[in-house]
Image (cartoon, rainbow, N blue to C red; front, side, top):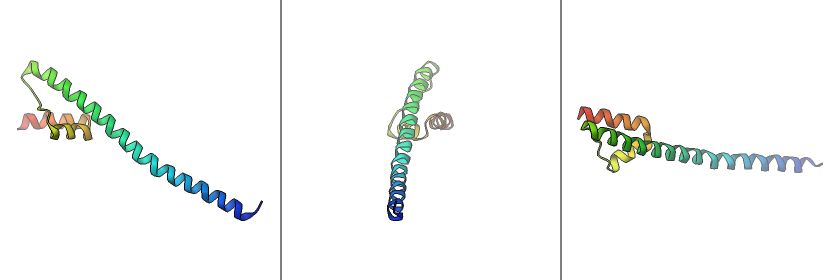
Length: 86
């Protein structure tokens, strides 16, 4: 086997690895945001459902949806704390 062929093969494998990493990292971030968004939205609905019996309500608008979507469960907890403070 020639040394040039081996070097080209290893370089190709390295490029495939780099390309794979560039594609996997954004997909992991996107999946995390989707999971946080779903959990945050479900938790907002549960808080409003239970809170309706207690006279407590978090208005679902674009701002609260973004906070719950990006931060997930801690975001909903933050919204509950802010509702009590304000």
